[in-house]
Amino acid sequence: MSEENKKTPASEEQKIAFYDRLKEELEKTDEWPVKYMYKFIVPNKEENEEEVKKAFEGKEYDFHKNYSKSGKYVSLTVVTNEDSADDIIKRYRSLEHIEGLVAL
Image 1 (cartoon, one colour):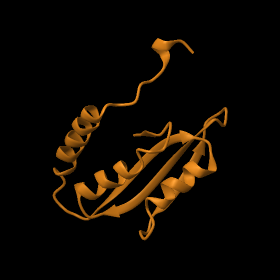
Image 2: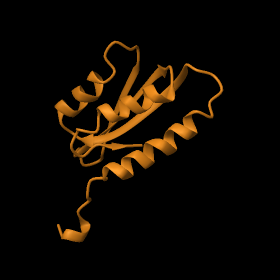
Image 3: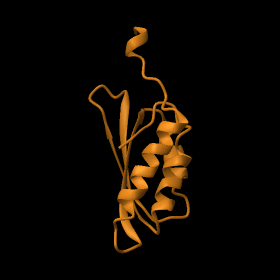
């Protein structure tokens, strides 16, 4: 893979800007709690799925997964009730350590 094709991790400033925009959009919601759908794409490794599930321990949630055609990646969808925009952002932040994770 050439150097220009490699994805560089988002800087902390980029992450802060993303989460600020997300919080602004989420706070337009008039009623909390809300049913929120998280969608992640991760390399297809069992430990990645387990890490995502671990972030939702103690909560009731619906969980779905779909594999890419090649099987190299898996899309993980988690639907749960959340009490605030801050709770949603904390959950996203708790998963940043997963290598190759894309949050949609």
